[in-house]
Length: 253
Length: 253
DNA sequence: TGCGGTGTTGCATTTCTTGCAACACTCGTT
DNA sequence: AACGAGTGTTGCAAGAAATGCAACACCGCA
Image (cartoon, rainbow over all chains, first blue to last red; front, side, top):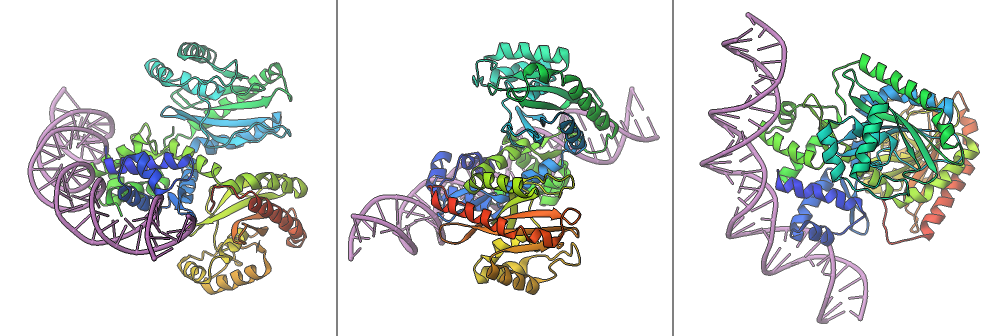
């Protein structure tokens, strides 16, 4: 809607790929160097980009701090956290909390496994949307037409042989997940990692977040992990209850 | 430098304080509602701002993802991480890694304490710059005039009775830290929490990051914590060595 | 010393942003 | 049901602000 701002903001994802110098930025934006310079300067003043010693630009610290505050404003996270910790104490595995927002699913909290073999993931990282158990739950709750539109828009990378291959398979999986009220990812993202997940619902019944327990094959088999399902669901329901109860002014994802 | 972009970016810290509606944004920017609307729309298109169900705006998920990528591009973090984990395994306490950038010090990595009583902090959160041990190390390495300028610019909140009270005290502390090559924070931020910290240096000897071990009084006394100093310094030196060795193309903070 | 590469500045042109005012919409109220 | 306040949204004309250009400054290197 606003060309100047649009251009300036386009610089951010570009720099997320790695540091770049003025010329590179100008070229990828399709603008004159002097224009790129002025945009970068403005971003710099706000701390969103940083100029490192070799003069190249990269994303700045203020961006990280802003994101931090953004997450702290999500009240679902605050409510859920103690529950996640308790679940982790009971089962020992990695626990995740994720939300959906505008075609993306991302982790907003995590409690690390107490086993030495851990799964890699990071708070803030976008989730593999076509295979992750939490993503299935969050998308399964969308209205039918949105689900369809999103499914068609997505890429379906074959992380493993069990990854969801195409929109139709994905929609079928979502229908199933919607039906049963929980989801799994059995080696669909990384061959040796399984997850079970359950939805967290607001007062109106809509899914506002999803949580999962993940563990590698070498620690527990998929079947053993599935025995945790009732515990996971109970935890999720507990969070749902508390979230619906305290319906403070603040809204959520 | 660019008014439009400047205004748009000013919206972000504003929304970091909490969700706001169009009118509030317009008022705080000092622009007409329609202008604010168009700026917000542009931010929205880039996912930096999200419109929640009650129509109010808050910071968006893309921002969190961007910040995530920003941190992953910091190579010091990648190199340091395994060292931090090892240190945590040896002493059991919370370990932090922090960098300085444009008047801010922030944590970019953390390994949680294995004791039940934990200290609150979060990756990405700006550090209490006038008292934190890591902040002292990072600032102590700045050229003299920058140090002076920054010290005068800062606020000196009295978190506790032992907090650094004013610029002069701070500069004296920095001089001392610079001299001895390590730093402490003994109850300067939270009454019952102590830290010891050591600097990580690049090939040119400049401090590029700092790391610390923190523990509450109830777990170990300040004196006991200080016995860990040699271990902390050895770890930091190990990271420095590795960082200086691998001087790849990528620059750093 | 001269040369390529890169970043920076002043300026005229024109585009793009701005504020306005009127309109649409959703609530809560009478 | 009708009303009115509050809020969000759009088209448009005026003017301010962003743009690209070209010339300049700077650095490392041959």
